[in-house]
Image (tube, rainbow, N blue to C red; front, top):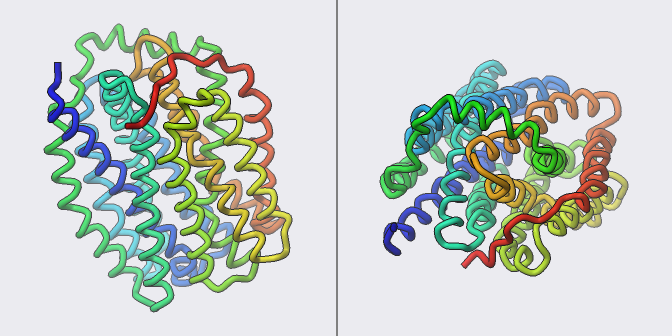
Length: 394
């Protein structure tokens, strides 16, 4: 039985492993208007650049289950974090030289690292939930959002000061290295590889026949699209769609990630009180209401305030769905991999699709597609049957 100190250090390591990617990704997102200008890219061309992040994320998620089965969670997480730390400077260098291919390649590395390690980190978090009997994943994802808040706030300041994107990206990667090293050391040996790959493959095939798990995948698809579309496009929606200055667009994005962080840190209490199905359905409704106002409102103050609802609605989708998947039956690796893979379809298809729609209908009009997915999610969540409910995050 693990000691209290071992569990505490392991949980701290996981908090850091969520915080670092959040910091890295928000640093990139907060400078997307500046990068777009450096690349002289149209909305559609930016969608193709963002496809590097989406393709990397999806590829990482799709191969992560097999990699975890073969190598264990620790190795997968170590390589994934290293890929993220290598990708961010490449993004900055590509922007400096106005090379879209380099920016896309850097985003591909970031996506591979985040997507490849996220399933492993969530499996580790679900294991800590199992040991402690408490909901840990919302808090872990809350630290991801805390990283995005810090990254967005710093990006806002640097954007307002006209600080070069290349040194911003290189600096964030450099200061993240010590935290990543400590996290990998403190997480312990990780969950070992599956000693029976054949049985693991059989479990992977069986989970595709689990109708409740597939329904959970539909919900996470919509809520991941709500989160991902903001991460990809929100600053540009506010700049191009509402006429704000780039620094104000970054400020609105900061409000979004702050709302997500608040929702995730409060998530344990709401989960204990209302259960997973109600939380997922409520998330779709609240997020959809906020997004609808952003799309429809011509008043910039109203639209900016509605972003808070958008962020609160998107906050708990991924962690709650992944926690439910891990807890829904035997073979947690296969189950988390399946649901995460379905969710990452949103990150794969979202940026180019929304970019192409935005080129024809404007970015505000393109968000109607996200609203449609959220409406479907809200409609199907009553059919979910809650599994074992975890008590709290503390």
